[in-house]
Image (cartoon, rainbow over all chains, first blue to last red; front, side, top):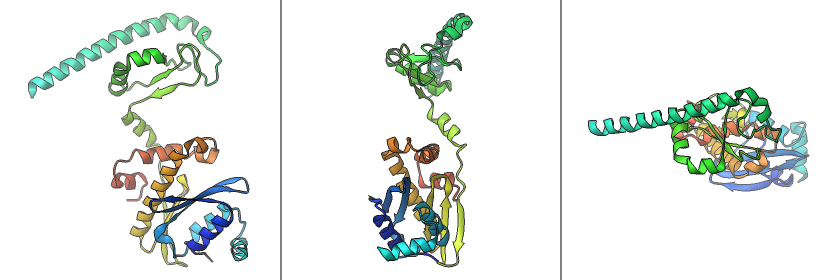
Length: 77
Length: 198
């Protein structure tokens, strides 16, 4: 189970992370549940799915305990 | 050409002799102070001492540093000396000046261990560099490496832009030597080698 980089960007935005434009993409950074988070999304990855290993790391980093919790949040925004 | 070399060597030898003479006097002075080392110890924040710190390194005052900057840089580069400078009278935090070659040697200890895998679900290659929490992915391994390089550069740029923030946060502070090592890469191929991606 995974997500697209576009949906990941939507989640980052909804969580209040700030998108900082970089030469080759956008760096999302800010605090989620008092924890500092930094996620770089490359412009060439836009329409693609996030590979499973990377996705699992991002899910945890964004403060979700499970992929299901991430998906529930995504569906609610 | 040979004449130039001879002249260069002569100057270099003179400089070394001059340095040894100065250093010899300093050692002699330091030796004299050796008996009351503890008395010169100050308890200022940063663990510095007015003249000499606990490891025997002398703090050069800012005025002396300004007046002898060329000599100091020569010693740092040619004699592998690390120089501490700061407020020698009041103490407090100091600045270290070290040869870039030496610093790069020290930074070699901070190795990158990338994990390169193929994800069956998305049919993509993914790379993770845990040391700096960087990820890269692509349809081919080459694309994943290229994307990883771009992401690493963006993360490094951001790290040094916001360094005052990151140095106050423990997990990010630990990434400092790794980003420093990356920042010393001169070419993309050097960066690939440093990141262990070749």
